[in-house]
Image (cartoon, rainbow, N blue to C red; front, side, top):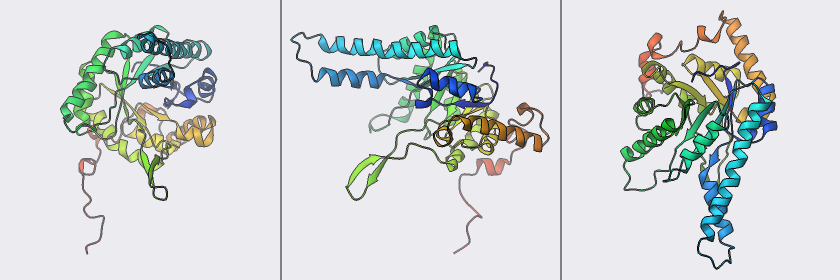
Amino acid sequence: MGLSLCSPVVVASSPFTATVEGVTAAAEAGAGAVVLKSIFEEQIIGLSERLASHNTSPFGDTDDYLQRYVGEDYRAQFLRLVSESKARTNVPIIASVNCIGAGARWIEYASELAAAGADALEINVFTLAADRHRRSEQIEEEYQYVVRRVCSAVKIPVSVKLPLRLTAPINIVDRLWAVGARGVVLYNRMFEPDVDVERVRFVAGDPFSEPSELRNSLRWTALCARVVPQVDVAVSTGVHTGTQAVKALLCGARVVQVCTAIQHGGYKAIGAICKQIEEWADEHGFGTIEEFRGRLSEEIGADRELLLRAQYMRFFPKI
């Protein structure tokens, strides 16, 4: 997205990037950039509603005041995080906004984060498609609407974190580029419920990724690099080692985002991934990442049949 990075390893928006200390630790460990913990409008709404439930004031505008006060305080924390992170590190600082509201608050958040010194924005516009009357076209148009509004409000580059289950990912990426997006992240790791069969209830699923989940991104990264090369792709979810990072880079990713790797190995996991990428490149005779990035994208000789195949064929024995 026009940013200068010292490595292709970016720390994803997470608790590891929620404090200046965490951001500093990531930068010192070798991160090329840091995506700050997301500002969630739903968190503002939820907290103000909990406070309002204890409200005994006779004044009718108290709820509005609570939401405004909570929102301003919450937003101020993120603005300080941006400015202090910029002052303490030399890596690009990418602010993150979760855009869920119907109003224009997320536009204000984006503008203020940019003004605070963020080098880029990563916006998350996922909404759960649980309404039977909402067509997929409506949801996709909402994504495009949000991105257009944000891109028109800020001068810094904007990336969009996309959900995994999209009907036509390449079309979405192309439409987002048309309204100003410079990058996409494949993919957003959503909260997934699990079922406790003993207590017969929904419970929170494991929030951490597995290396096998990387396969969800590789095909579409290669296709995006071929069809919409103007958009930079960040691969997120499933990158735990340098080998997985190399896979993403070979498919055309500009960067990889890591989170679970830090959960398991601490911030030193960042340096380990960077070292493994360098060792692989040396072993295969590459002097720079640019010499092998995108080698497996469709444009430069990937197995088109394998890349575009959607069904298993000869991998199972006949019955």
